Image (cartoon, rainbow, N blue to C red; front, side, top):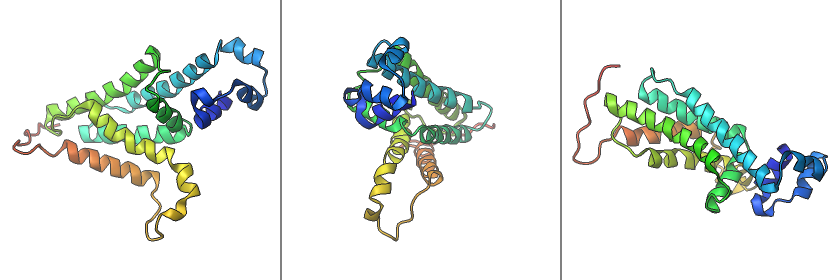
Length: 204
């Protein structure tokens, strides 16, 4: 699986070669095909594992008893740290987005839906207590995931071409990026639209 992750992350599904995977894993094709009937089956298992782990992590991180702002901060922190902990995940997912999700099946969709459902529940908590204004969960998720994914996926680029960044600009840490995304998201969710008054907050 590690060898397959390296190959798919580096070359995408179409560019990945089973020969390179088995050579790196030090097994033969017969052994690989014993466990996975095709390259597509191997790739799908990787997607299931990656997204399944993310869905499980955000669901476990949510604590309904916490204030909505704290729940949202935990949600963002969990996505960021799970993404960084799985260095192949950003490249694979960005490629899959670019290809229209053509390798995603219902099992992967369920894992993705779990992430969105967790965020939707947090937003509903916030709207119910008056902490958040109304917001579309999918739009909110995109605004959270996009900068975190880009930061993680661009790590090799930044390492190679760090000289493009002016010397006066400090190198951001993961904590810096998480704090920025948390602050930006909360700013949107706690700012009423023009002409609307914020709902009165209910006691926790």
